[in-house]
Image 1 (cartoon, rainbow, N blue to C red):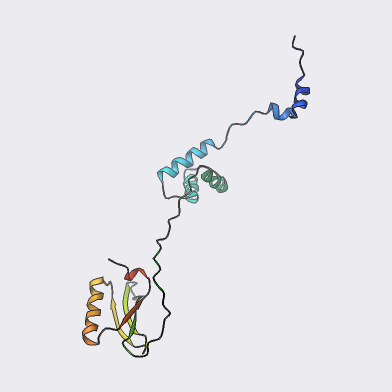
Image 2: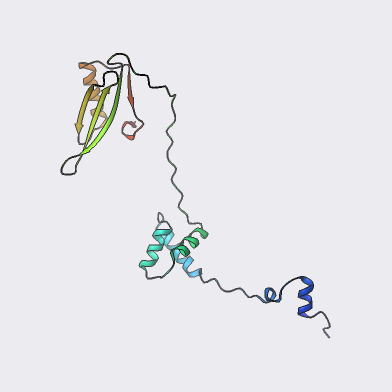
Length: 175
């Protein structure tokens, strides 16, 4: 009847080992854990692998953090990093020291705390030629309107300079 090649002989001809031919894959033991990680990640959108690991531990699941990291990455759940908003680069000029007073002022905010722990915000305006403090205005909070009032007051009493330098901090970036 069936007078063909034996299994051993046919595997040798094919160049395959008998163990590879008879191999039965084991069921994935991480399937339930992977599903649990995915449901936690969908419920808590901003949680990374570390927080998911802590949530699993809170539920009483004993699991290695490296396994959670691997399964989290395999599922493609990595949180996208938020890109920083790029401030457009203006034409840069070298900082030349002014020769006379009231040509260039530098303006910035300085923060301090009181003994009770409340924040004090001080607007400091300095003349770059004489290093004189033109104005120091301490306030708990300072709006843009208050800042323009201070500059208008300085314009009446002292006159405005040709240029005012500020840093690119968030304090001076408004509408």
